[in-house]
Length: 361
Image (cartoon, rainbow, N blue to C red; front, side, top):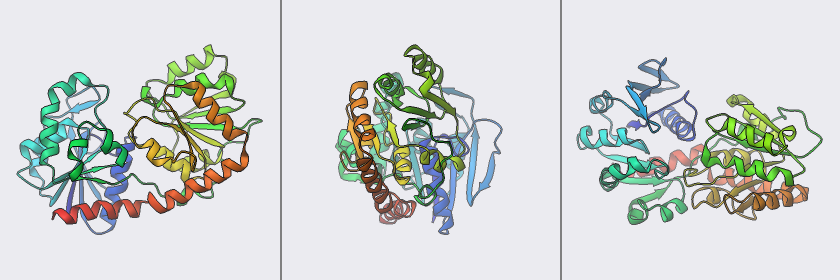
């Protein structure tokens, strides 16, 4: 099968969607399919290369507006491809419009990763085109049933939606040695890009009520503001900013923690793949109910606790409940790992995607 994945970025650019496409594309290539990823070039990357069996074509970008790389070459490169299936990964308006204009009537599917949440000015003009793309897709894949039900764009098209969750290989996380030495207090962990919708400011505001240390992995535009907040609240002695972590270090980082926290505050946190990694490592999770995949991945009271967003007091109460009960932490951690092994493996994800392809073809 000839498969074309379309998005704005690809590995080594870091991000949940980028990692998802890499995992899916490499697994498809390993299964014998001819797989290409068409993305844009952030600079310094080859325009055409093969990475782990996946051909990666990078179009020159002229500018980036509202996190959207613009490329005049992108539609032309898409038109030159001859896939049996084009797989769009939304949101990337340039890719979707290119498919509308230059897709030559080929079959295409779309994985709807997230609504457009913050860029409302762009959405005002893009909304009619988006509806055309969704209506024209042969199938729509969403990462959770909750997202289908709560998205204003997906709910009317629920009949053509299939749930295909993201995935993580649980094996590396199962028996890793701790990366960091233990502290004299229980350890909380957050890992991810430092963006507003991660809600780490709420977790920092909860820290005065928590007798624990907090490890914050990753980096991004909110790092300085979060560091300033921790300093203002006099908790910087218990909050450690680790910076960007190498993939090889992640299992050991999870093994260094007692509880994982993803305090998302907006629908832009559409799934929370880090929750899968934490669960694969046997950690209980505390996350928030934002109407997306966070409360689909973490089953409240089973593999962790789900609390209202933008509520530091609720976060503190949930975290303290876990810190006070080691048996509950172990029980929830084991339930989370079992859930990853049974529902969220790469093999399951690839089989679900391929089933959608085969139904269309």
